[in-house]
Image (cartoon, rainbow over all chains, first blue to last red; front, top):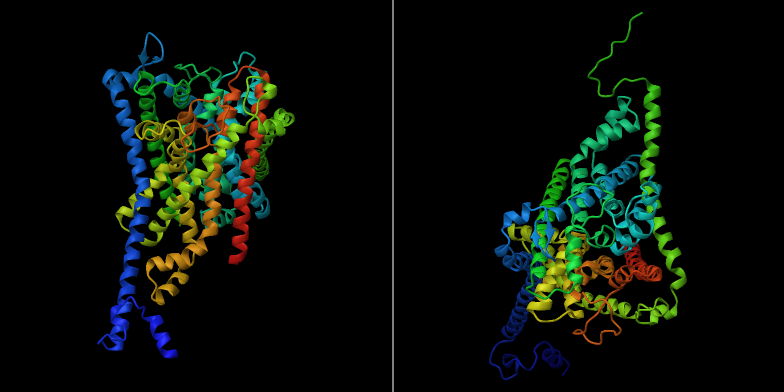
Length: 331
Length: 297
């Protein structure tokens, strides 16, 4: 009685071979149930693999989507404006007559703000990285590092507010003829934003420099400053360069700070106390104007976006090439 | 008496020791001041925002819609819009992100295709957020005809945070010791069974803290939503995914661009609220991570 119940539990009644009337021997019946389960498991396995694979495919589709959208939407623009005129023109007035589509003033604005940010973040970030990696006691480092990294987590709109309501008035005390919207204030604040990128990545590269190199220099009588600047920094140079390039790429692609604080005057200038317009700032300005799909303004932002995408792509690839180089050296 | 000959090719320049020690001390302070300037920048930023906005942050501000009169203005529409977007982005991001990470770590081979997908994900993480906004505008808003809706915004945000979520989830999966997997394989488990019963339960806490951090980035992101939503004066909250919406940082940006000085103070009150939301999300992520680390040890 008891045995038969166990039997039915292991051989569900739905399987005909398991019924008492079946002529098959017991061990074969069992085999069949196992095979079914194995087939079911195999089916589940295949289904899971394909589901996961299609999830992974989404990131590939995203990249393809970005390229296709940018190229296709700016295609109409480049039919009207020759690519060469777009890349070398020095007047950018797409939204009013007489229209002119030379993108260089926007590129100059972007590069000006990004350079100021780059100088600020390099001075602060590299100094911080050297201190944290070469000087700071372990406990100090464990407290300071997360505090600096908070800077990277603050929303960019907050940085824009900070530039406009604190940094610009402060700078106006130094340069009395500074106008409210200027490249300098936007650049400095952006430098503060990307400082943790420089300091964290550079410090990682410095920590990866083998101890033996430092010990050798100390044994020759070098001071800590000499060890840091003549041994550790050169040895970690590719990592430091990588951190700088990646931070710059972030600065080039940043929108809100320049939209809020740098102004909206496309201008060919490298004077930091002037008002400029960055590429991202222009895109934001047009987007706020609610321009209909297919209009000239709508097409322009995709042309500018395509250029922006290519610029950051090149910088990211270069940055990761340098990262790979220092990893190869010491890890 | 013999004079000590100085070798010009010495690794360490042999200026006199007093100068070298002095230089050493000076530069320590320069390096420290780099750190201190960074921290001072952070503190000044927080102080500026809190001094400007603290007195405006009250219950009326949180529960009112935006208004043309500074005294009546509130952030309710943006707060609810942000929560809608956060929720929907989480629903889309979590399965896709974890799925991709599991596939890359546990199923995919170590061949060229996998490496290409990996490089592609790293590249996507470096694409400026405003480009994602343009992608969303062309694909979700116009091509798929979703309009400037919460759904279009959330899908755009999903694509934006996905690389971060994938990379964080991969790290969590990598942290699961190989011996656990081997033990399960030795018992005859299939790959999916190993993932389902061994890898995922171990990796989920690490994944969750990474995902929460990624989503907190989505909360503070304004550029893509500026492109998708564009319209910035709303006196209603979204009731379904097809409705128009605004989010906290975009509302703050709108107030900042208004000429009246009072709106600047209101913007900083909005910033305080935004920072509180971010801080609590980060707190949850850190709490999960600490709890999980202690369990491991």
